[in-house]
Length: 241
Ligand code: F6R
Image (cartoon, rainbow, N blue to C red; front, side, top):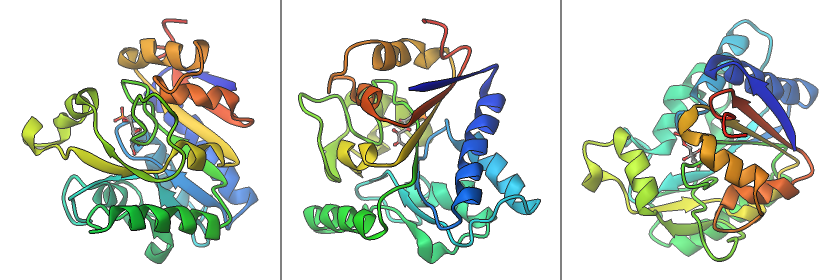
């Protein structure tokens, strides 16, 4: 594991964006695995700026997102598809046809999960996967479990995740109870993994995930075994070390 310690969220975002931009400059046909949530928004803002200034182009990039809520269509304000358009895709030169997100409206979820795994394989796997860290140690929506789930699958969101995400919805009852998420195998097979973590609220779980035992009860801990994992975290998030 490589640790990049930053002063604050802005520096974290710049450093993570730098890693992604370098990946795309070195390999313009990169497959990027992308995340939603508060943590990567600043990273995306930097990428948008550098795309506008002509420093990086996403014309030949393909993307696969980690997850999507079950029951929200792509136009729903809180769907992850919408999030990606608002926070990144609509502002860079990517071809929308090259962006992929699990279909939360699929009637056959098992088939949708199999399709998504096959899609990742057909793209040649993920070159760089960007992650955030859930308050309970989840990555994607791989919630604390007794085993590490391997491929894309449907999950019941834990109460902790529903609580953490209700800030985006009208009330707690409006938060979807299920999601589709890439599995741990999909994430671990990415050639590089970059995680962004910011703020004191993540400090305790960051310590457990990366300086404690590897266990499916803290799903992010598996990243300790990844051969090319970079943690970009700010001082507040690192304060328990
Ligand atoms: C988002 C995702 C989640 C978030 C995590 C942290 O696509 O897969 O694992 O990365 O819940 O969320 P924030 O960044 O909002 O604290």
